[in-house]
Length: 415
Image (spheres, rainbow, N blue to C red):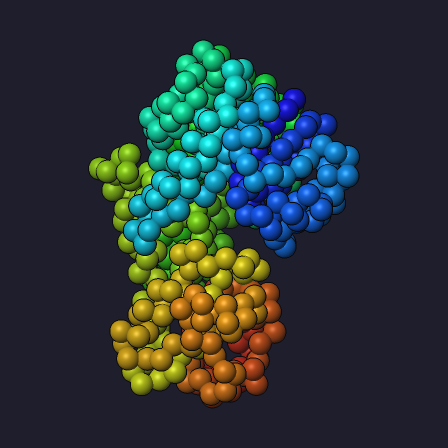
């Protein structure tokens, strides 16, 4: 098989390496010349992805994977499979900015050849593959969809840091715009994946399945946060409550926390609501989760005139990514309440913090602190690391409270 993978990010590059590792010929496309150069040297352009260095190096050394900047030229060489994983940027309200996805679709269309199957893995609102992607491919190529070429949707279902493990574990969902296109898509994925391939009987079903699994997590976390706030009100430990509830097989309650961040969970419920504006539970869940940073500040107490240290700008521990991070919400809440928020994160330099709009902590006095990200480094923090801090809200439950003698450490939903 000849394959083209467009957008060599944290999903696309491991996928390209996976396809090449199965013995296929792969061309990876990316508009960033640094990414192209590093991939062609067999070097991952980003850290933290397990086994990517060895799998990528083996694929490049074997001559099965190369990177280019020109997507149209790569597609025009002829390919059995084109997989597109460009980012779908969103605004502060999670409304899609279609620019990147449209540009990639148009670039593919200009080089599209008969016999190719084009698959979108970027998570999108329901109906996008049929009503946006396919018409652009037809218009830009002059070819007839589902006759000259196929279009399908197959959502990425992987977690950064363990992509290869997830590719081998979770069923691969594929949904086509025709029965023949869906079958062809399933055959192509089966040639490089050992996981089950699930034909979804339509692109819309595959799109909705992706939104369903992420919206479920947002709703579940909202329930955990509601339980935590109820536990605070009556003085019980929500962790014990949730553990007890989950001890039977019908309950799978997640953990509460200061914020829900990242590219996925805060965003995809909004995509779902675009197609189902009458849905109530996802909308309420979003409201609940978006209110948690303000609740964490409530637990901290009076902050006017105080310097408050926010520990963690990344949206989750160990990942240098701040999309929809709770740090941004905490910054705004603290400023509204008259506090001076300062920030620290082991993954970010002071210059990087400033570039993202966060005032770096100088390591000197702070009056209070909120833990926003569950970085492993925070488990060993002591009062000596936080001079002057007289009260702490541990929004992720990662601190060892015994290392802060005389300093109250409040965890959400726990006495």
